[in-house]
Image 1: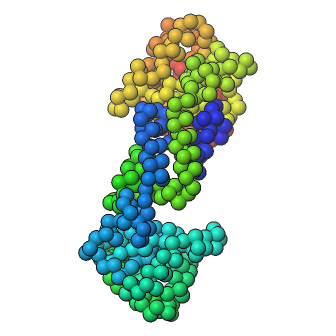
Image 2 (image 1 turned 180 degrees about the vertical axis):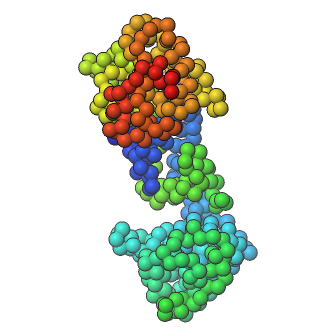
Image 3 (image 1 turned 90 degrees about the horizontal axis):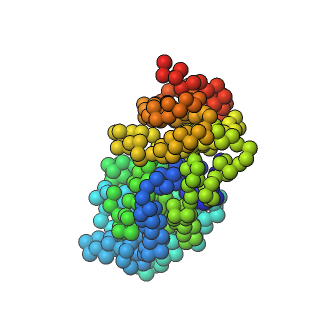
Length: 205
Length: 205
C-alpha cells in the first residue's frame, strides 16, 4: 500500500503492529480517528499511555491492579491457602465470572514456549515456588489451557514443588484440548473448577 | 466484563470505541501492549497524535498530505482539467493502484446520508462546484460507490453544475451495485475508469 503522507503511513504501520490487525484494518481505524474530534484521539492515546505507565501488578499474585495488593488477594473471605495458577488476567476474569472459586490466583504472565523463546525464567514462576516452600499453600490448581505449552508449564512447576507434598490438581478436562480457557462457557469452566482432579491422575491419560 | 483496574477498564473502553473492535478484542490488544516494551505503546500513541494534529489536507483536492498541495495535484503530468470525485482517500489509493487514470481527484470526505445526519454542507462539495464555475474543469468523473447514498451525492453535485455544460461521467458499473469501491479488484476498477459513461446515461437505468 502506498500512502500520500508519511505521518499516515507511520500511524498505519504502528496500528498494524497490534496482533490481528492488518494494514487495511489499520488504515480504516486511522481514517476513522481523522474524521473524529481531536479529543477522541488524545483520550485514546492517554488511556494507552496511562495503562502502560501507571498500572500496578499485585505483589502477591501479579494480577493487574490499581493498588499494591489486588482486590482478590486482599479479600479476607478468600482462602489464601488454595492457589489457582493461570496464564493471564483474562483467565482470572473468566474463572471469577463462574463464581465457583473462593481461593486466590497466581498469574504466570505466559506459558513456557521454546519456539517463541519463552523459558521458565521469563515467567512469574519462582515466587509461586517460594510461596509453596514457605508452607503457606495447601493446594495448587493448575488452570492453564490444555495445550502443549500449558502441559509443559504445569509439569515444570509440578517438578519444582513435588517434594513439598502439597495437594495439586488440574481443572477437569471438560474444556476441549487445544481450546483457549477464556473462550469456554461459564458452566463448563465452573464445573471444571469444581471437579478438579489430582495432578498425578492427569499424567496417566 | 468486570476489570480489576480502572486504568485497564478505561483503556479497553477507549479502544473499543474504534469501529469493528469489541470489548474482548480491545482487552486482547491492551494486554498485548502491557506485555510489550514501554516504547511500543508510546510510539503508537505518538503516531496517532501526530497523524491527527500534524497531517494536512491538500488545499486543492482535500487528499491527505504532508504538504499544502498533495503529490497528485502538484504533479505537472496530471491533467488538472479532469477531476475524479471520490468519497475518501482509500478510493484515491485504489484508483491510483490501477495506473489507469492521469487526471486529479476531489475528495468529498463522505457521502450525503440523511439517516446519519450528513448533509451536503457537511461534505467538501462547494469548493468542487466553485472549480467548475471558474471554468477550469473539462470533465467530472463520479466515482462514488453505487449505493443509495453515493447516487444521491452524485445527483446533488450534478444538479449544482448542470448549467456549466461540462462533460460528466460515472465509472462503469462493472463494480457490483452496493459494493464498496475500495474492495474492488484492480482490473475491474481500472476498466471501470477507462469505460466511464456520460452521467445522463446512468440516470436512464
